[in-house]
Length: 129
Image: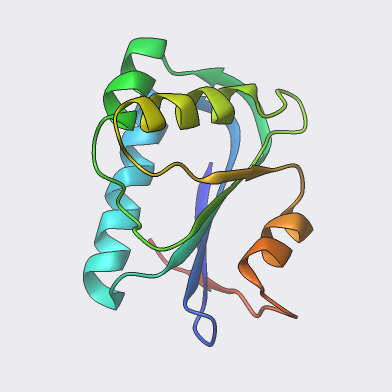
């Protein structure tokens, strides 16, 4: 499952992913974020994987995606899955770094992501896909 929420005041987009994250979900995530940024411009972002139960994206696909330019070019934070921990996010970050791209910060909680972005009392509103 995938959902978007936007904090207009802080120009921050939160992408929440839950359940099983597979290649199809990764493609859908890219598509909806590209469409949102095309309408609203660049911003900072939080990719919240807190409730991801399983990762079903082949390493080759993660490596391929990591070598492409970031869709969101502002500061980005990844919230690691409670079940999987942050190893997948950290591996993706290593792939980005090896490709000469800027990696996102990885944290364990949504509150830590808000703190890293300096969001005090954020007001995220749901975005229709």
